[in-house]
Each structure stands twice: as C-alpha cells, then as structure tokens.
Image (cartoon, rainbow, N blue to C red; front, side):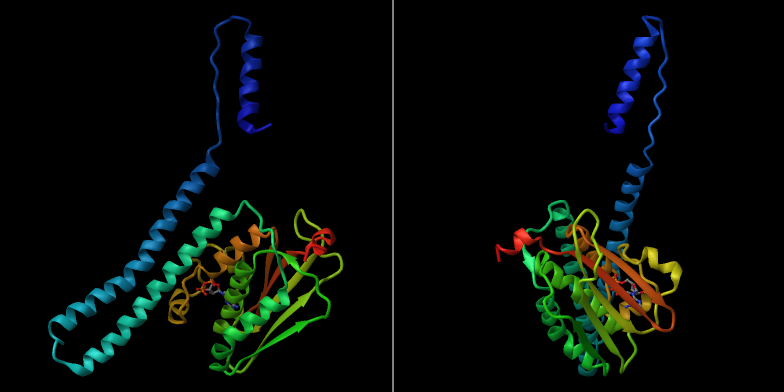
Length: 280
Ligand code: ADP
C-alpha cells in the first residue's frame, strides 16, 4: 500500500465512523523528500552554471585582450591561446561528464542485459591510462585470479567506471607509487538483491581522504579540495558517474581510506547466472 493510498483509506474510515455528522479532516503530509529533491535539482543547475561560467569568463577576457591591447603582441598571443585552449578543454570535459550523467540517470531503472569480462575491460582501461601513469612514474598492477566469471553489465559503462576510478588513483596518488587493481570472486560476497558478486578494488598510495568527506564523495561537484581538483583537470563529477552506473548494475561501491596512506575504492558487481552463462 502506498502512503497516499493509506491516507485515503484512513480518511474513508474516518468519514464512515462520523456517520453523517459534520467533521473536519486534517491531513498532514510529509513533503521533506520532495522538497529535498527540488533543492538538489536547483543546486545542481546553480553548480553546473558556475562551473561553466568561470572558464567562459576567462575565455571572453582573453579574446577581448587579443582584440585590443595585445593585438600585435605575438608572444602574448601564443601564451594566451595556450590558456584559452586549457579553459575550452575544461568546458568540454564538463559538458561530456554532464551528458554522461544525464544519460545514465535516464537508464538507471532498466538494468543492463549483457555480459562483461571484467578482466578484459580493466585491461583496456589500463592500456588507455598507461601514459598518464608513466608521466608520474607510476605503475598499474592488475591482480586477478584465473577463471573469473563474467558479470552482468554494459561494457562501455563499466569501462567508464574503472576509467574514472583509475584516473583518480593516478591523479591523487603519489609519484613513483603503484596502483593495484584486484579482481576477486570472494566467497559469500553478494550484491543487494542478487546472487554472488565479483569484487574489483582499486588501491592507490596517496594522500587519502579524511573520514568526514567519505559519505559525500559521490555527490555531484563535491570535492575535498576544489582548486586542486580543477588544477588536475577534474570536473567533480567522476564519482557521481561511478555511483550511478554501479546503481544501474545493481552493484555497490565502498570507499576505504587512511589519511596520508591511500584509498581503496571497491565495486561489487553481480556475476552472470549459470543459465545466462550457457548463452555466451
Ligand atoms: P574530480 O574530478 O574532482 O576528481 P571525482 O568525483 O572523481 O571528481 O572525485 C571527487 C573528489 O573525491 C575529488 O575532488 C577528490 O577530492 C576526492 N577523491 C577521489 N578519488 C580520490 C583518491 N583516489 N584519493 C584521494 N581523493 C580522491
């Protein structure tokens, strides 16, 4: 019975019991959740606009300077164009992440149907991020046992999950350290409402995250240090995207971190059932 129905039923009973007498009915409804959702939507639009407005203002400023005082200054032009390019790229990243987020949100209630070989997906991401890791003298080590079962999922979306987690591990990890990706089928591990699960853990050696930030990390635009995240090319949306994709996959995400040592992001994903397995 939905709460609204329950309320209607209670009103009907009250009217019947009143037996034709004049009655006053006082109905109180808790709208906290609806109000909260409205506020979150408004906050999100304000945040997204603010994130776009800053690089846009920089771009306009430099364009005006190049059209005016620096018109004939070749050296300034080269320098300014470099900054303008960075700012335009920042806007492009933001739009890309906003679009991903809205697309995932639209599909969130229909679980994916395919099967994904997680080892292969991780291998793809590791190859993609190898140059970025080497630039900081970092290694990426994949620790996966043999014979891992496939998971139920959409391969593009799962690639995006591990790309975001590994990208963060490289961004926030210390130079010359190793990022470890472990893939296991721990006995007894289960995802909410599903059978057995595969656990993928991404561990970095970095600054770690203070305890009070952990519950809010997957909120859109939530950053521990905004200036630092922006300087590293972050949009503040990476973990929000991860959370929504993991939700769509009926999986779970846990974050463990020790300040000054590093962090582990663990994703549990439902293993494809035996019946589905024969369909490969
Ligand atoms: P961003 O684009 O800022 O990296 P994310 O949504 O991916 O956005 O992450 C949100 C915030 O969580 C980051 O700004 C950073 O403060 C923190 N964070 C994420 N991953 C890590 C990590 N591996 N180590 C330390 N801090 C992290």
